[in-house]
Every structure is written in structure tokens, then in C-alpha cells.
Image 1: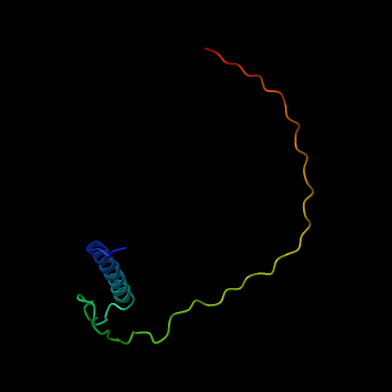
Image 2: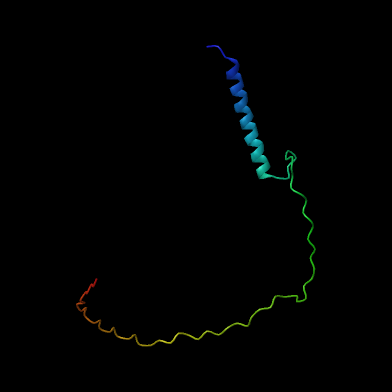
Length: 90
């Protein structure tokens, strides 16, 4: 079996696709890497300005009353169903 030019070109395209996918994956994992042609801009450093209150304001603890044990009401009887007449008029 003779290897043709198309076989060599297809192998080169497959190798190029693997290299391209690996480069895209490397840039996706580390956007500031040296292989990225468009790295993200550097962030502006944040300034910590002291707040007027040194601690956060907390609400006072609430008092929740303990549950009161009471008798469970007895079940009531359900009325029996009644027949309903259906009148359809045109």
C-alpha cells in the first residue's frame, strides 16, 4: 500500500488539531499565560478605606416563647354528599 500526499496531509491536519485544542485548553485554564495573544488587562488594586463603624451592627437576640402543650381538638364529622341536579338550558 502506497502512502499518498493526502494521507500525509490528513495526518498533519490531525496533529494540528490536537495542538490547537491543547493550546486553547491551556489558555482557558490560565488566561495570563505567555501563549495567550490577548491576555486580560491587569486589575486596579483595591484600596481598603476604614469604615465609620468598626464592627457590624447586630440586632439584639430575640426571645422566643417555649411551645405550650395543649389538647388536640377532636375530629369533626364531614357532611354526607348530596345529589346535585344539572340543568342545561339552551
